[in-house]
Amino acid sequence: MREPQASVLETPEVIERSTTGTGEDFEAEVIVHNCDCHTYQQVITLFCKVIPGMTPTHAFELAWQIDHQGSAGVFQGDRKQADGIAKQLADGGLRVEVRY
Image 1: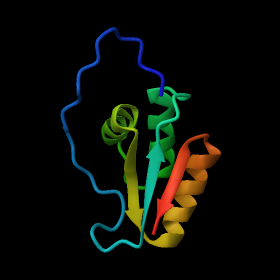
Image 2: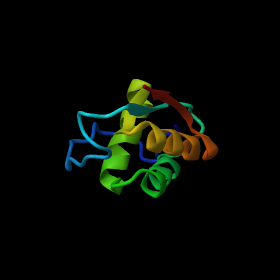
Image 3: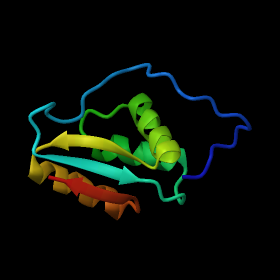
């Protein structure tokens, strides 16, 4: 992801915890990998549009994790829903993996 235009980035504190998916009893997990070709805002907008229950704050935290750690789990749930979310994120240009 491209860095925001601010000259200094601070590690974001977790301000909000939200669940996106069914919790611990899930069949699949959607992982997004860093691709250095999208802005934070593009990723945040796509996450909020595609992932149920996603908030801009949580989407920013995930985008930051992807940018600085290389990947992040963005959804956990049933296999069919995870596949659909992964397809939409991939159609948006993100590098996506589904783990079953």
